[in-house]
Amino acid sequence: MNITKKEIASLVSKKINTTNDEGLFILNSFFQILKKQLQHNDIKLSKFGVFYTKKTKSRIGRNPKTMETYKIPSVNKVFFRSSKITKDILN
Image (cartoon, rainbow, N blue to C red; front, side, top):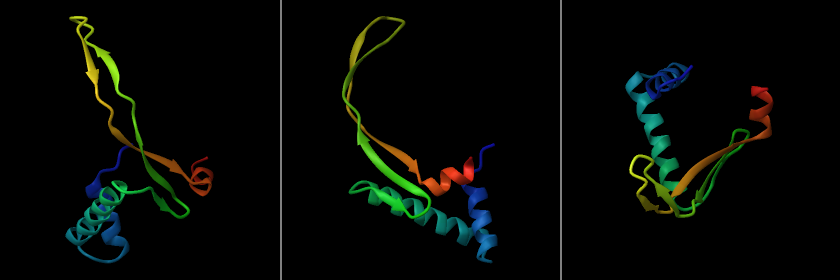
C-alpha cells in the first residue's frame, strides 16, 4: 500500500490539530530542508535512520534495439539506512 504526501499531510494536521493546508506546508517545508541539507552532508534522524548520498560511477550503456552504445554520466543518488529501532518495529 502506498501513502501519498497529501495523506501524510492530513495525518500531521490531525495530530497537531491544524488545517490540511498547514499540514501540507509543514510537510513541504520538511522536504525542502532535507533536499537542501543533502547537498552538503548526511542527515541523521535519531531513532529513525540516515539519509545519505553516493556518487555513481559513469558507465557505458547500450540501446538494446539498435545496439548503439552511449556514456551514462555519474550522478549523485540518495539512499536511506534505517536505524535498529526502526528495523525492530518493522520486523
